[in-house]
Length: 583
Ligand code: ARG
Image (cartoon, rainbow, N blue to C red; front, side):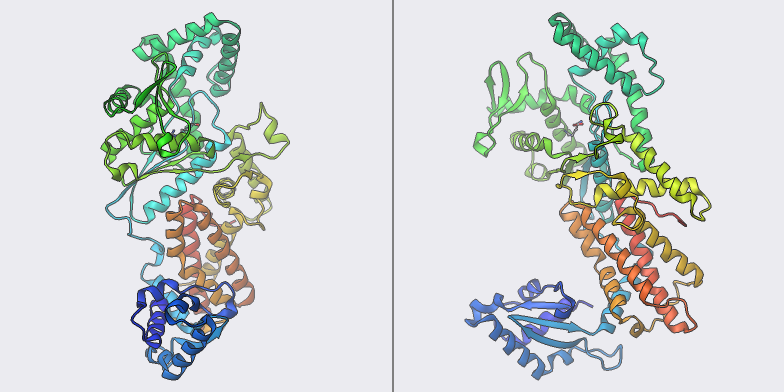
């Protein structure tokens, strides 16, 4: 039952004016924030121009007409006796406020839920379309830092959301595995490799070697020259260089994989920058052919002033070597051809805003179909920092992400010690990781954030563990009641109190929330929603006796508990968070 549709029909009839369509009316209908303003509101200032009347007059008149013509009653149906769908219409300062029968709201939400049950929230609006989601993309032989953790978590959730909406999704990890830094590393390793045991914490050690060789390069121009030579060798496929590069890559990948395993994140492709190293000439050729390359102090650049970007995009350095942007452009060509994508989303921090503006602008000069160039989207996010103190000081400004995750798990293990939980290890992992994931998703992504682990693990805060805890509660209520989801004989009138209605209305809009998160590429919308559902359940639980001798009311309240459980589990799944059996 589409209440908005019914209300727009009522208004349309009462208005009896050809200048405004029912569709338009429907689009203007809002859901008021304050409950006392009803379930739906129609802002009459939208009609002021057509009717040449003040909005409050329009509202008053319309209300009269609706009440007198009994249009509200005309839409009643027989399901619940003679109860009408719209119980009351009010005119308040230019708004027409509609109060829907509570029993109808409940009935409607249950019907909607029952169509999908455990699949509640699954959508098919993306069928036939392909979305590429590129995220994580750490750099080989460099630490996986807390910013990489954020893209990993946001990207994984977006992939889940798109998939849930019926899109074919492909997850890409654009590894930073190319560039002169690898030549430096090889040169450093040649000199001091024997001093380091790479079988343990290899990234730390490679980072140190990198630091040392960089210092040496600064002191001694000759060493820098050697590094440049080595890069050339690497590009030409020199066996010694390529083997070492592969070894560094394998060692790094092992560390990254451990993090991905903990987070339960997977990729369909790990084609990193090096994969595109032999595909860049085509980019240069096309840009050349299209007259887009100009010389700037020996380098080749694309001027972007025309499209409002002051900084030109450098395509080739003066010494002939390619750069980051060129590899990204080659990747766009490759992805368009390989995947025929409808959208290609890059989850990368805001410090690369200019880079993506530039490459998306240059991509328009690559003779690609507009479908592809219009589908390129940079999903950017703000800075993420650790609070001062223990976690942030370990070597420079970053902490190892693996240490952070381990710490989250061990802290949650401490909490579990006090609880009567069977598989403490497993639950501690689910809760610790869930806490970190939720913390990274709960704010709108563009906001700068201080990552506070203690806060993330607070069972009473707006946190992952809080939602997990409420979800577990729904499970235990249903277990205790020996609930049978097939028993759908529900007296909806039992669920018309304020707390039940609030919860039901939230559950009813799950699909809209998912679509909104998807359209804005904003998992935080879904994260906030999960908090709202969990806390609405908590109020419902506190205010209503669920398990009781009155089987009719037990049945209805259990059914709402079941709807809550499925909604929360499915929402958390989209965020990438598991739900323990007990906690
Ligand atoms: N490796 C880069 C970094 O760590 C991120 C890569 C982003 N993706 C891209 N297609 N440029 O900063």
